[in-house]
Image (tube, rainbow, N blue to C red):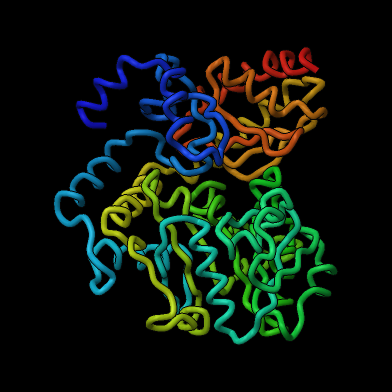
Length: 418
């Protein structure tokens, strides 16, 4: 924030900023719940000086929290060195990041990375890769969310998102998530790709059943179709592994004993840049890695050296500070703590690592999220009866415990408003 803007912001209330927002910004998200002006670690502050524990992390984006010193230094240094070049040229951060992503995916020979600015753009790239097979059919899952640009929207299932923009591109069929028989019936000789999330985030944090991704791999391989895994929300350590499909109970056979699946395409974004916009579509193996040739896809900002430097810094800190383990431990602590409350409105929890849903026994998710916000906690409702948490991977056990302690009062307030 510039000095002039800081001075301007210091004298304005959240209400004043909201009025300015409403008169200048398109109303695609409704009225903002708060106007945030600062963040540090797992906390953010609004324009009125109130502090909140950020348990949403910009929706699974701020994996290192806010204002992380290593990330800030890496971005500042890169911006002072080389801020942007056209796609006629390569840069060292871009190449190093592609190599690191392939390493973390244990990618087979011939794999390649294309960089984007967001998850929706990454899924658009996956859509184009699928079309390069010469087939047009696409299969996605009911409950899926893959973005809101036109191709990604065709893969997204929610009617409220789709209907205002129909007819959508592509030849997309949606099948029940986790139903192997339905998936097998939908895939045929015209199918270019099956696109799945290992854990459906917007549908309420719903992990794929054991063996489902392995079955999808077998079905697509037999049909000559691609298997695309959308790890935009689940990737980069969110679930306690670098990528969710690397969990044996998600990516292996039904017994969780075989090797995990090797998809043809993986899409990434959200946490990859630690808050700086960057995404990637990864073609795994010679076939998927070479389907897009010169002139067949492009971007101005994808692979920007500053964004790539941010992603490299983010991956470095996750590994250096043991944040995969922290995600597993603290995520399990949240789930056991919430379930241990014995509150009549808590019907259970689900998720992986620090992607957690609290399932409620009544349609009070929005009211509960609002009550938590009033008491200094940021979460969001995913559906009428589920709360989603996707906090920074640096969240401590002590911080998690404050949420668990605050939840009963928020649930009581929501129930009283029914």
